[in-house]
Image (cartoon, rainbow, N blue to C red; front, side, top):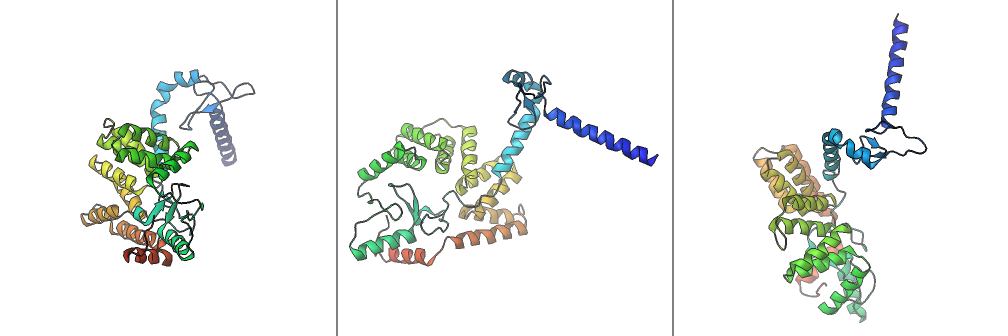
Length: 317
């Protein structure tokens, strides 16, 4: 009897598996199977497939709730993944992580690369010593001598669809008070995937500068920036979630931002720990990683540059 029972169970399990596989290979709306002349396409959530747009629309009312839930879960998987580094990445010359303190690096209008002070200083010191003209430490193009030349460089980069140049142009228009042009360039840069542009757009929609305040767009652009490794965007999301009572989500954002080296997030995390909202273990771990993150951005060359700047020996462009 035991043998018969086991065989029956195995057959039933096999049948269930085949049914599951079969269900995956048919249209969720009309039940049509995938054959040579019928190609099924997955819904964005990945849970079901459809043979046509018409079937997808017909099945929408039945699938909407589960689809929305799954998409939110997939979005959160991406959103709360700890980035390997900040959006600034590494200096392309020394290959050390760039500090999120932007005063310690320079963006070159000729090639749109961020160069750390250490490499900029070493290059500039050599040029002064050898009586050479100032050139970009990375691409070796002559350094722009005026704002007009910087603008010309940026426009050349924009013609090549450079999102970093688009962002820089948008930021310039913003500071000039031309919010319409700023929005235009920032939007184009964001569409090309520029993380900094997403962050600026989130702030514009939050504050209503040049646009109507829009919380949905604010959060969307902040999330895109955070996914790209922008610590300030991540911090802002944490504050936003906390104010809306979503405390667990808020703490996740704050911890990720602190680990990326964001000072304000570490201070906020310390306050949360002091008030019992975050465990000692989580705070201590974030603090250790925060310190390690800062340490990775240091080098003898960068320290030499900082000392030279303090003495007024050289001006880093």
